[in-house]
Each structure stands twice: as structure tokens, then as C-alpha cells.
Length: 213
Image 1 (spheres, helix red, strand yellow):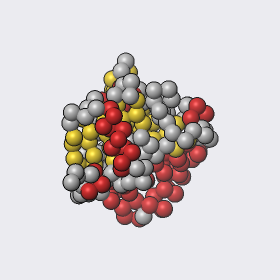
Image 2 (spheres, rainbow, N blue to C red):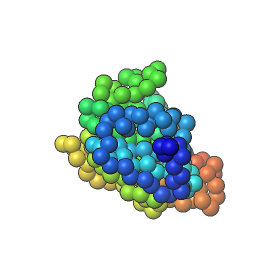
Image 3 (cartoon, rainbow, N blue to C red):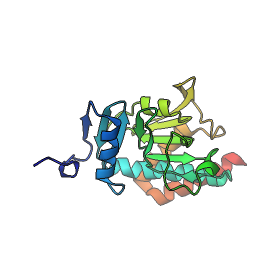
């Protein structure tokens, strides 16, 4: 009897790496696992990483996503939240599932679509990765052309922008240049662990409003 991927048990926080895969193998694995799954997949030129997130990972990603939505809302910016959509391109031989992602400048180009294929659709304008258990690799996002990538490791927020096909670290987001996010977002996340998410989000919204005025 052949072992199927659905039979594999990957403890939360751990990861499984499969190598020497073909694109068709990756597509078959995606189909077998289905869309309603807790596993996160990252594929790059024959290597597939499968990871099961911890609670702190999921809690943090939702909070950061909520903070981004507050920024977009208060700035009155149009957007579409793409969450952990599978972004893939057979031409580039890459596939990735961010913790959170947003279409902002390109939101009208993907609005109403059921699926995204980066062979003919634009990548998200912002991708967010939570690196509490594993360090995000740049390769997928660089090759797929995601303009801005945030990485949070449980302590620090790192903001990267794409320049000539490579990411460079900057102090302020190009999407939200008015705000000192590398300090305020980690402070808000730590505050949420003490006073709760709802109160922390309200405080963050107030800070955004004060910064704008």
C-alpha cells in the first residue's frame, strides 16, 4: 500500500522537505491535500517544504493582517485581501503560500477572480511571513516578483522591497511611508498578549489616526 500525503502527521512547528519533484508532482500534491487544510506549502524548483503552523504563528499572522487592514482603511486605500492564497507559476517553477497577502495597486486586476495564476496574473503587492518557527526564504517571492515582503520573527519586523530582482531591507514601508511600522507593529503585538487583541487593535487605530492628522 502506498503512503498518501494525507496520512502524514507533521507536528505543529515542524516541517517536511521533499526534493527532486517535478511541477506535475507539486500540482498533484496541491490537488490531493485540497484547499481546506492546515498545512502550508512552499515550492521552489523541485524542492517542496510542508509546514504545520503553531497557534502563536496563526494568532500573529491574523493580528498583523488586521493591522494592515486598519492602515488601508484609515488611508482610504482600495484593496483585496488574499490571505494564504497559493501563488504559483509553472513558467518560473515557483509556488508559495504567504501567511497574509494583499493586492493594493493591482486590486482591480484580480477582483472577482476565483483563482490566481502568476503566469498571467500580477503578484500581490504585499506579502507577510511569520518566521517564529522557520526562516522564510527569499527565492520564491523574488522570482515571483512580489514588490514588498514583511517578515516578523516574534521580536522584530523586517520590511523588504524588491530592487532589480533582489530584496533589500528598508526602514519604512513604501506602501505606508508615513508610519514607523518596524517599531509600532512589534509593540502592538506584544501589547496584545497582555491587554488582548481587541484593545491592542483599537490603540493601533488611534495611533494611525493621530499620525495621519
